[in-house]
Length: 496
Image 1 (spheres, rainbow, N blue to C red):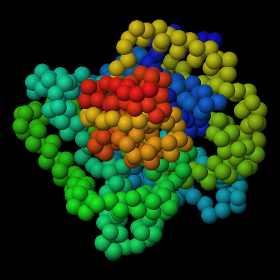
Image 2: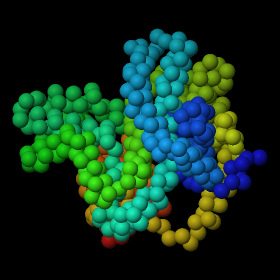
Image 3: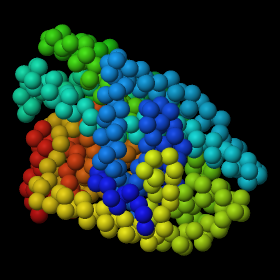
Image 4: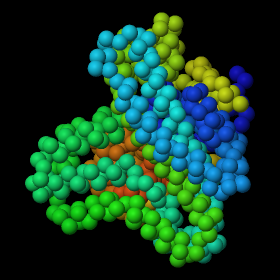
C-alpha cells in the first residue's frame, strides 16, 4: 500500500461519534474544493471509522497544518483585516443556506422518483459542504492564534498567564460580536418562561413556539429534534425556580448582548492601549471560533431536513437507517441507481473504514478494510510513541472551579445520564450534546482548543471547561467524585 499517511507525521484532531455518511458534511471531495475556493488551499482530512462502536478518528498531516498557518499569514500580509473579510462571508451565506434548505423538503417522500430523491439529497449535502468549510477552517487552524494572543497579553500587556485578569481579557476580546444560536435559544427560553410566569402565555403554547423555532438544534448529523414536550419540561423547571429578578437580569443581558460585548471589548482596548493590528488578532480568532460553531448549527438545520430523506433512502435500499449511514454519500447515490450493491459494500467494509486524499488533497479515496486496519495500527502506534512519557495536561477553555460526580458520555445518545451538577466528560462535544450540557456543572473533553464547541458553550453558559485532557475517558470513572479546577487545567479525584 503506497500511502503518504504512512510516511508523514500525523496530528490527531480527536474522536467523534459519527458514521461514514455523516462525514460527508465536512470531509469528502466537494468540501476540499470549496475550501480551496474560499481559503486558497485544498483540505483533506484523514478519517478512520470504528464502525462497530460508531466513532471516527480524525487526523491531519502535520505538514498540512503548517501549510494552512502559512496561508493565513499570507492572506493577512498586505492587509491585516483581509482574513476577517473572508470569514465574515459566512454571515451572509448562512441565511441564504438555511432559506435554500427550507425548500428542500417534500410532503410525501414515497411519491418521489429515485432521481428526484437523489437530487434533493445531493442538493441538501451540497449546501452543507459549502458552509462547513468555515467549521473546518476554525477547527484546523485554531492553534495558529494561540501564541500570537499569548505574546500580546503577556509581553505587551504585561498580564501573567496564570492570572484571572489574563483569562478575563482573553475571553472578552475573542467573544464574537453576534449572539450565538446557543445564547439566542437560551434567551428565547427565558423570554417564554417570563411570559408563562406572568400569565401572558400558557405553558403548552410557549413550548410549541420554542419547538417550532429551535427544535432542529440538537439534530447535528442524526440526533433527535426537540419537541414541545421537551420544552414543556424545561419551561416547567425554569418557571418553578424562584428566579424573578435573576431571570429578568439574565434575559436583559442576552437581549443586549452585542451592545454589552462591544462596550467590554472597547473598554479593554482603551484601558490597555491595544493597537489596532494587535486587536485584530483577537477579532480574527473570535470570527474563526464563531463561524466554526455556528456552521455546526447549519449542519443541524440541514440534518433536520435530512432525517426523512434517510428514512426513505433506507426503505428503498432495504437497509436500516444505521446501515445506510455506514455508506459514504456517493455510495448511497450509486446504490439507489442500481450501480452498486449497498449490502455488499457494507459487508466488505466490516468493522473499520478509512477515507482520505492523495498528497495534493484534490482526489478523494476510500480505503479497503485491510488498508484501514493497517493505517490505524500504524498511525496510533506512532502517535503513542511520540507522546510516551508526556504528562497529560488540560487547557483552560473557560475558568472556574467546581466539584461533582464524573459522568462519562461517549455519545449524545447517552445524554440522559447527565443530571444537574454532574461533570460532563467526553471525547468532544457537538451540538447534539446540548441537552446534557445545559445540566452539567462543567465540561471535560479529550480533544479541542479554544474554538471547540465545548469551549464556546462553556464560556456562554459560564461554567468551567477543560479541553485537550488526554485519555480523559479512561482516567475517570462514571459517578466518581472529582474536583475540576479549569483555571489551572487540573482535575483531582476525590473519591473512588
